[in-house]
Length: 167
Image: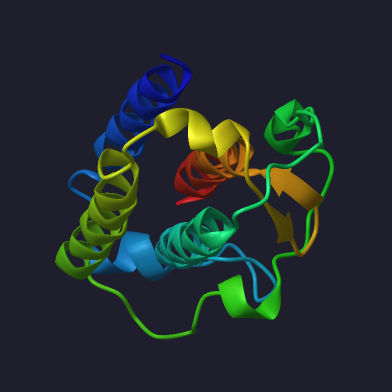
């Protein structure tokens, strides 16, 4: 049941994101408020890269045969935008100009890959038993990887709204 609820929240959050992005033109997607900031398109690139990296981590964690003894970590700190988090280089966006259609396609494809892996689990409770080491948050149960994706996206939705308000 827990995974089902997380998947529903992931979908609700993605629907909010797609609603915010709906109708944005190339200039709105690619404009930065300053040289050290990301554009809306770059935030979306980051979300896509992060989701794809998480999928790899979940797959690797599922290959483990050992049950984890770690407990759940509080993840709500991800929603606090007053605390700046530096994205690892591998998850940083490019400076390429992005178009609405390609961003939406890439968001849909990365989410489809996530659903593919989650929907093929014979026993979803395995996500509560296996772990994989996150580069920033250290050891995390695989269910937390999935849950943190939703919180991460909520964090960046706030960022996108802030950027959009300055356009």
